[in-house]
Length: 274
Image (cartoon, rainbow, N blue to C red; front, side):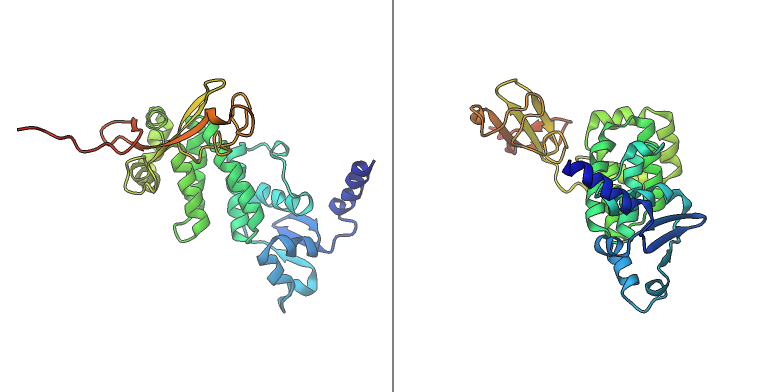
């Protein structure tokens, strides 16, 4: 009953009946509440607590590209519910997360940016080559290298491909990706420099997750969503605190400079007898 009451009460927040703030972008508007916008966005908080006209009119005009309409809608949903639902929109999930992250970064919504960034990091790993190209093109068209959050999104989208030789080779075989790289030198350059052995690579080490119970194994970046929770096997669900704690092992490794493989430890220089 308490949950039902909460959902019923939440409807008043979303209805606009008691709202005291309107966000406007072109002909689109969103009813929300000053206290919610101020709590979640440092940008809106400054606008609503200063001598700017927004603090008196209860209306804030946004000057974003209309392509961000869905992202702003997600931002308002986050103000009200601490989440947003990708199924409410028709655009690809990974693209929506990227757009939300850009908007959240602009309006200094730290917790929303973290949510969108984490969701983007996970979903961009799962798209096909053509979809990756669409997302990469958008990010590079609508971000710059002057904003830290933008750089992070560029690194994520490039890393989804450049971090694996096999994925990179598969992606480059797509004709649409070839055309994209020919038309966008920044993406092409970052792919070249952002690979495992590229000059922009900050950490080329691999991590190997091995579950001794079900023999599931994973070799790759320690930031991969599949093994970010190192206490749990993503295949069988065994946890370290279970009986098989000693069988859940993560080893560090170093990429081999001569191929796409890796070494368990840094390989020593060969010794020759003359």
